[in-house]
Image 1: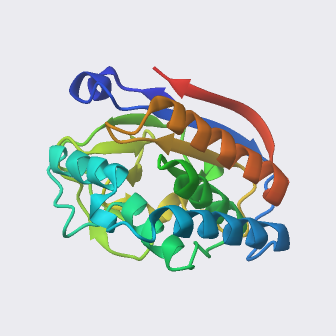
Image 2: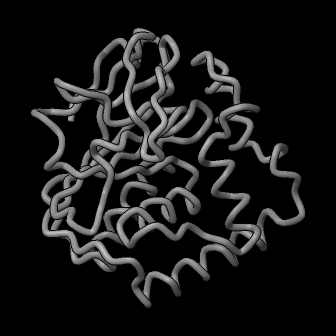
Length: 221
């Protein structure tokens, strides 16, 4: 994966990392992962249940980053905010074993971890800035156009995800996914080391709960 220098120029505190996972086994549920979800949700409840979500510093950081990218966080809720609300409510993510592994790492360390079917991407995906003209279909079927200067992950044909509006249907993880691109990124105010921990945790979960073989893992600078 590559990082367009324009991204760091505009958002100097932005941190992005990735890992390539092969031979993944994507299942609806995995007993050991379900146990880990309950443990992480309990930790979140103990730490954040008594704090208004909008007062959590990390939630504030994501909301401010959305504003910097010309996205209204009151209309498009940052995933970090959504995930912590669900965890505190005792409802951790339940999509499939690989996606859940990544989202669980997000809950633990606040950096957003997403995952894409690598076989559906063309050439080397690149982190860049939206020009305000790139339309694509979300996982839920809606067609969206990211805001000008929103951070994007693209291959040479299409958008894989837009930071604020969400992931593309074209590269979503399914039970047929065998090779995956795991991506971790922060918002300014979320520490680099937390992004590193989130990526490392997602990699560990992918190995433990999805039988993944990791080819590469790195933070881009």
